[in-house]
Image (cartoon, rainbow, N blue to C red):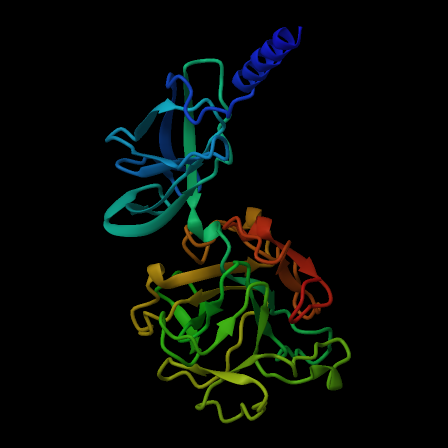
Length: 370
């Protein structure tokens, strides 16, 4: 009886070991995924298949390495012999496409550089041997990074038509340190070839690391870093601003706060401080690699751009900036001398359409979110 019982236990142990062995890293190899890669943006006018683009598939199941394959000339990529699992497709590509103007005409003589990323989070397996889907991409300027987070341009409530407490607030919405070295803040009148003001941070553009912005940090750029509450109780205290605009040719610009670093005018012939329109304007920040403004601002250097306007979009027919940079208007209905600013719905929130991205707030909140 003892021997028979021992034999039974050995048999049971072997059976359990067989039933509960490790999950296979590859199944039968019959599962496939076929993806069509598309960049479609009705506002910008694009509906393009992405050719010769590399796609990676990542899964957290089975401890597998990422799969990688390249789309063919029709924008189709096929993965075969896959494990039956959920996959996260990864697409990030830099491409050149012809600029499409306001009339919908493609201009092959004017190419625009785009960085595109996928919008799909997960591809779940199906009962079919092959899953077919379309991967739509978006422009990467909607991704986290250095953003214009708030613009206060209306001036405070007052009877003197006074508005010199204006400021622009930046925010680092990424998880990486960003650097302001050599960057340029611009006021644009009409399209990128009409730059009104351009003030530059000190330091070397693109490579400098003297002026960091930490992840989640707000940076206030004040027309003048002054506590304006001492002048108007409806104004704002900008004495703690990190930066202030300074024009050496503006002899009336004497409020130089020693605790605020200076952005200097770089446009010859400009003799006024940085001021923006109380109703409508375009504000852009650029990486500084193009600092000659006589021929306009190179679109490829623009880091972020916001157009604001108090007039309803239904009453306007034309934008003052290329729709590739901003598809809408912030501040619809915001009035002069209202003491109100426009601020992103959430810090760094960016769909590349300021009508959706910004709200009107009161009072302004320099250095923090409302």
